Each structure stands twice: as structure tokens, then as C-alpha cells.
Amino acid sequence: MRTPQATVVLARWDEASVEHLVLSDSALLLESPDGTVRAVLDDRLDRVPAEVLRSLEATDRLRNREGGFFTAAADPEVAARAVTGTTPRAEVRALAALSDGASRWVELFGEGDWTDCFGVLRKEGPVGLLRRVRALEAADARAGGARRWKLHDDATAAYAELPGR
Image (tube, rainbow, N blue to C red):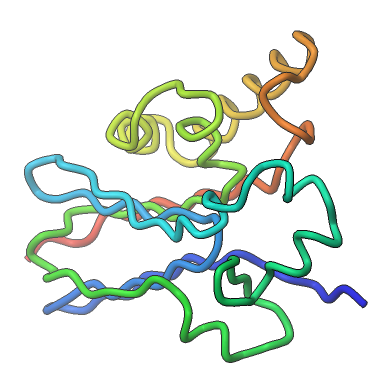
């Protein structure tokens, strides 16, 4: 029996630090004061061969197992398997959290790198990035959908500029 599951990306900050947690195929982007963007990713799902992911049974055998990948589901113990870390607050000017549907702009469609993606978020906000992703998905569907196995994926983005010190 399958259970509901989710990808997770979280960040919290105070005057001293920015803490993060990434589980499954979400992305956290951290922008430094000099404009450098660092992506925090949980790449375990990317290491699973694409042909395995086409089978629900095979995917289920790898979910929340060593050698596979982890998602938030009925087992609270998977939180301990997340990619976590802390960055000094002085090294983070802004951050963005992206679901895998939003990160398609970089990871699937190759419209730019993480720094370019952050620039779109800064200029157009999350709605602008999501509009771009949906337009790319529609164009891909018209071309036969060679780049993805489903038309849309969940697409959520959050962007935050941290207050100055």
C-alpha cells in the first residue's frame, strides 16, 4: 500500500546563522552578499537510473531505503536522512526554496544555471519563475514531450531577502 509523501525544503535564520534541511528533489538556493549562489540539493533521487523510476514497484523498493532515496512520508525517521547544514548569517543575503517542478527551469529545461534562476526570482518573483516553467512545459508538450515523463510537476517557489544587519 502506498502512502502520501512529499519533498521538503526548509530554512530558518536568526542573527547568527541560516539553518537548512533538504529532503528529496527540492532545492534551496543561498545567495551570498557578493551575488554568488549556492544550491543545496539532495541528489540521491538523481542517482537512481531513469528506467527504474518508470516502474512504481521498483521505485517503491528504493524509497526510504539505504542505497535509494528518501521522502517525507509516514516514517518520521527519514528527517534524520535529510541534507542539513548551517551557514553563517553574514554569508546569506537572500534565499529561495524550490520544489522540483520549479527547479525544472534549470534542471530539465536548461534555461540557465542557479545564479540565473536566482536573478529571475529577484526580478520577477516566484510567479515569474513559475510562469516561465509552465511556458516551457507547454512548448515541450507541443514538441512531443521528449524532455519529461509528465506534463507538469508540482511547482512551488519561495523567495526571501534577509534583512540587513
